[in-house]
Length: 243
Image 1: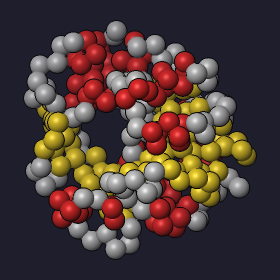
Image 2: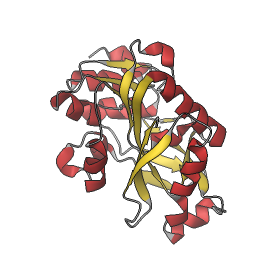
Image 3: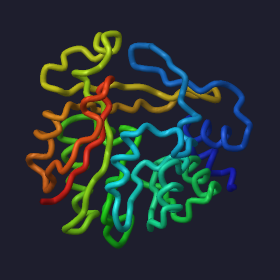
Image 4: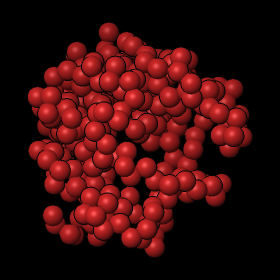
């Protein structure tokens, strides 16, 4: 692999690279904006389908046609899609993560913004956003803009498959951090800490199924299916289409 990709990356890209190369020097961590820290789930970024929850298998069954794996990271879902015979393009902001995805066998992975319609050329049939990254825009307007960008990236029968956490179903210890969730939304902000560096803050928006309905109301999308809304913990997948 081109080692310059590691050097161009922040802590996330470097920790993924080092884990892939078997050269991890320390346990990377995610540091929340209130100071709370947790171990970065490195094994998960590299996991195969046997380790995935049933809700993912249910949602991924709705994938069709040409696929954009938005926020592909180390290629967890892109590799699986590719093995299923899909024409898939993975995109991630991290040069290190994209280099690892390519080294693991992802045939088409690019560095860039998942919401940039000018980056990919021909349109997609499915945009898959796994790992709760659909909330990366950080607020209602940002998420709507991302949905609008996905509409530009897909044809008339396009769909979006993504997952998110419902803050109204969060466990009590997490609810204290989230604060007021009466409108069905909340945000969490964290940084990746690794290799003597602290990454830029990442703010993820969380929203309930009802809040999702409000978010898509002014976009070309509507909700086709929800998976996992009755499961404990509030994590669910949703499928949007242009009906």
